[in-house]
Image (cartoon, rainbow, N blue to C red):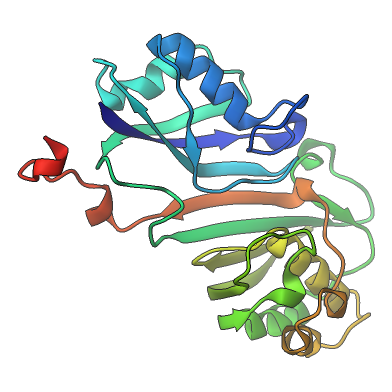
Length: 259
């Protein structure tokens, strides 16, 4: 038995998120079904990030256990032949048997994209949130710096979240404008349910001039969901990548556990 890691990219428009749900198509369901057919085993993947309905990913991570003789690095090629065109495996590799994608230190990077113009751009309408009122990206950038560091993000967490600990560390949060495209790029050690979308919705309020640049800092301190801005729509959000220390992904051939 070996544990295999997949790096998964998907266009999330038609999926009800990552995690399996009754009577709804999800990315996890698609992977389980296609892996089970490919390997002739019952496969259930364990995902690193349970993205919401409509959210996209360039580099989500999952693992599964298998008895297959197919080399781990070749599974991505075989699996991509049967996956739908909106789900593509970017990489497959064998990892230590005790590696768990949600129980190891990692850095997650998300981007929230806003199309800020008079009219929708049809070519990116599935991947950006359209805002036609002028946004001040400089003020958004200034406000976003209050998020950097270790904080209790209760104000930026959905009331439906089930985890008891709302403390997370944000390493950077940058608002970048390139013509009509505004990208909120945020990197941290983990994120709460709807956290990035609430941050985006809050920064948009600042960009519109409806809130001052100290709005984010004040909302953090209140530890109340109602203190922050609205939850921005899912379609603008992409999980860009999840990074783990290479040493925890590398198999030690001298370890008894891996033999």
